[in-house]
Length: 487
Image (cartoon, rainbow, N blue to C red):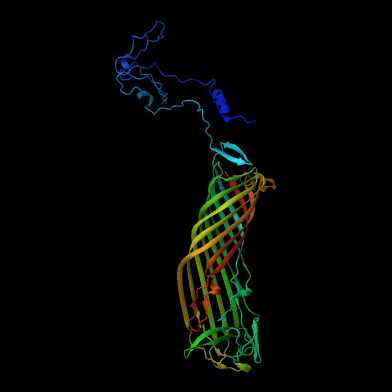
């Protein structure tokens, strides 16, 4: 049987007011504007007043002027004075308080009604707002640059003699090997980083969280095994195929490297989120779901570099007298993304152990900037003519920059486990500041689509490489370990 809450509230109100001291005011003036004649009744000789008779009525200016409500006092406990103007002057002149004692209505910090298995339940609490602060240690894996041929892919399968060959990392001819490489040699880059979170949770479990993270840069270098036999048409370490325009035709020229060859790849990521959490719209005893609305910012910076040097030794180890070929190609891409995001947060568990996660989707404005610079991006061998080409005696440099803005979608998925680990660890549980924190471990996956990346944007045009539009996707996978405080 259910009992309506109204009788409960009424009985509670009656119990609350029983035994309370009553607040009284001086007898009302006969006329609120004439305090000099304030006695309502006649003194009976014992200092008491009798009720006025019917013919002791008003003075014709408004009848009995009883005070309608109890006014707040300023502590002076003084009485109104004759000629004082405002009769409540000595009481501070404060606005009236219609409920000088206990209010008959409950005043909770949070009240709500929710459906639990078909039964509507009322919930209220008097908790104060809680502030949230956490520090996190991050282990991060950034997506590798992808598989992109170093050189113009239309010509990378040609052999030095000009014939077609097979490309499995090496193209073979009767005169030796003609190696082509690509950026697939890199694996996902491992980084370390930190993250800070601060915000608050209201009694109804709504709240606001501001978080920011930094992923430290990391650099990876890939190079073929060193070789000691020179001669760039006999056993070159690597090659780059360029598209060259000669006599109005596009033909390939190759830069062959028999001294050194390497690729370098680097990443650095910043980010911040501002999320507002609504009160849970779905609730069970140990499970709840709430909507989130916020703003996301990301800064993703990547660089990709190619280095190669070729000797002046020709076929059969003969010295050609040509200058050495030293080539550098450096590409960088930086994306600044900012935009609104929506999502849901879900919590499973209680105070001692909880698993919770977030799924968020953002539509961000991507303001990207790309640059390409270096020197000596040309070939020293022309396979169509079987010619060895003399490199210029001085460096030929190039420098290109490009920027733009477009829309990039972002998907952000997190899952965490949280429990009071520090309170049971020896030594740490003796430190009050530490043992009040919860330990949290989790995983986060961030996917950004439609963004420029350096290894895929290089246009291998001889002497003057360019930037091409080749947007692709990027991921950031993070394992984090955190200490959370609520105070």
